[in-house]
Picture 1 (cartoon, rainbow, N blue to C red):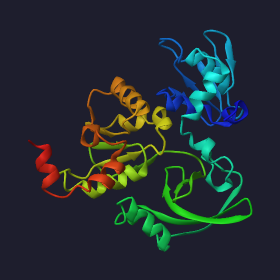
Picture 2: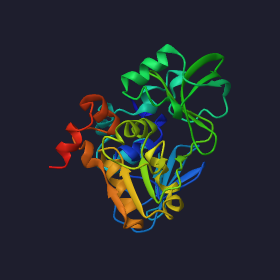
Picture 3: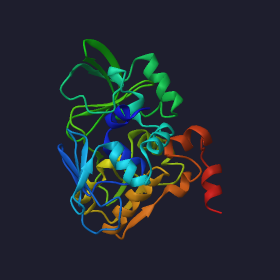
Length: 292
């Protein structure tokens, strides 16, 4: 990786990998607490269209390379060595048009929306151990850059679709959270929809009653859900076991005292779906084991 390639990665994703989440954001900008020092007011701003940052409290700014030089207190060479060891989706997929992580809202057309029928998509869901949860999903056929594609679609509250298959991870339309309501006073919050689908597979095994569900579709959306949490008596969090997940739990706990971090359920795995894939929990054995 060189500096030009590093600077094409979304700065939001760089900050997310370091455990920093926005305090507020919109389609044009995102605000963060100072990632270089302890501050109580957000003074670090990202211009999303330019992919540049500016720190108002110090009067400095720049691109991704400038940020990481200051963050790691190292040289450009040190930054590039660090970047080579990361797994940035927006870099890995940037040379494949249909796999870009960014929202391709201006260069696509949805051709068809149906129930999941394609054998390749059904097999992918089986591999992820959620093949029986297709009632929450759509099969989306879309056209982008003069080519036709298809994938699993999970709709968000703005009418956009999170699209997934073995090779693609994008959002068609506006990026937003997804809410599924059952009139409950309890809420369960998930980072991605595969974690939500995984939980639905073990909900009865864990002897959990149905609740309302909120899926972030990206942990960076955490700053958008404060009002969505206000009306609940209890909130369960099922985030990833990483720095970003830790920070997301901390942000919500600072606002609500009724929050339960449920990651102990899959503490040895990256996320809930990975736990489902590798542990394949079944009724009785897993529940009894956890109750000892």
